Length: 99
Length: 333
Image (cartoon, rainbow over all chains, first blue to last red; front, side, top):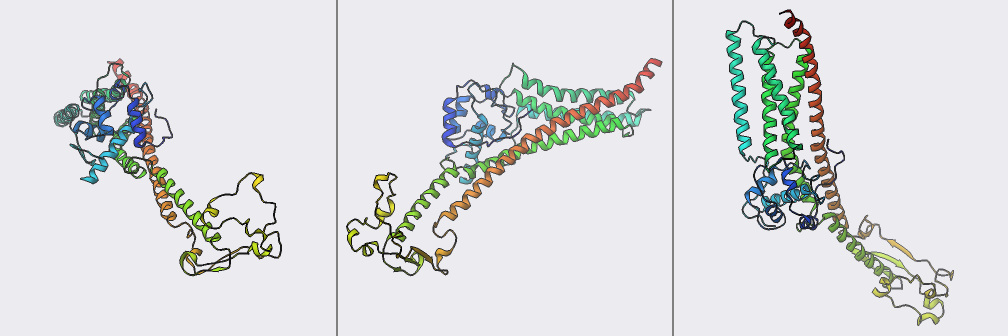
């Protein structure tokens, strides 16, 4: 059962960068994700979350992610992949405006 | 922020995956096959009722598919052997099995909705599948809305917008406080200025004259530095001389803003602050909405699970009712 009382999902850029630096690349979040349909490596996802261009598989994953939070509890270092995905979504939204 | 090869976040995106395609094809195939059997049996069969052979076949297969829908996804989530993308496939099969199960159980009724238990179970299943469908729609819409609100709450550089506005607001207040103090202490004499910010009347005494010129050398320099420097907390720096107020005969400081002056307007002493306050309010509203959308996602999931449990209960009730009718018949044969 999901816990009641959600907190804010988004984090600032510096917080996201900090979390990505703390990621140990164990893939547990990706294994627990019901939205991910195609294989993506955690390194690529981490890299594209904070900088550079967003490749089509990562963009598809970001759009498909529905913030269920299944990725949070399996993380052995207590990171919030859902917040990182939200950051990616915000980046995609901004790129929409740029387009 | 750059986004090279892939841009935009449309609501109407559709990414086909092998699991999605295969499960969709299977759903249509099975439902089509079942509908064909239903039409054939309705025309050819002599007993098109829920308790006919075909009716039972629909009931058992429909129940099996619903059990698969309910258990399959939960088992995959709890499984230790997982592969990337495996859960996504399980989710698509969960949806497919739910649709197939509902269709087969609907056909099982053969248009006979008299037994209440079965009708309630069917209603429960319809509500469950619809809630799942709405939930999937929310899963698509809500994260995008959350992202839009999060975008409002972040600056272009990705900083917290509230923090950024607060900093600006603080600097505006500090700046205006200095300006205000300067307006008070700029001239010790009677000052009547006109227009804009100086449209005030400040009546100030001249302590030096009152004390016979003795303290003219001790008087602090007026102006910016005097206004900016706060009084020391140290008691050693407090002058023991009488203050102008203590002299009794002195007129008190009076600040009389002109009613027509812009200064009489609320917030006039901190120009620019009002705009920041408004944008602060907008960001706070965005944060509230973000939280609300998350509540919708979470509580809809809880609602769907509750509905699933209710439907299981109604189905068990119907099975118990059906067995009460069927067991004597089976025993008689």
